[in-house]
Length: 158
Image (cartoon, rainbow, N blue to C red):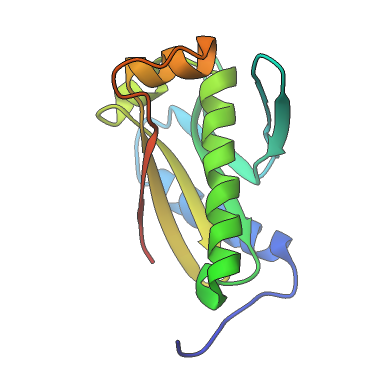
């Protein structure tokens, strides 16, 4: 498994990721989006249950303040154990579902039907792409199971 890296504080990892992404965004002109370390609280409400999850930051449009990407950071590497990887993956999936429930709409039109979550775990960066279809929206909105109501999340990295 090799050397395991970690940080003393998750805030250090969060700041490093946002500063890195801001440096990349500064190469684009005009800048219509901005990265933020401000936590985004997402609530997913279903028929008889709900949950609330918080992200470690986000990409917002400057005009209209539309959410375009989520950030999640951990001070440890996800591959340190199967349990750690499973917990981080479940949290990221819950954040994606919370985003879909609270902000349905056009965000996925920007990336060929995908929403994106960028995560940094210690010294490793991952991109997760959630593929959304109409049947899945019907499922999370109305509980209607028809067709192929699954959320597909593809993770790339480190």
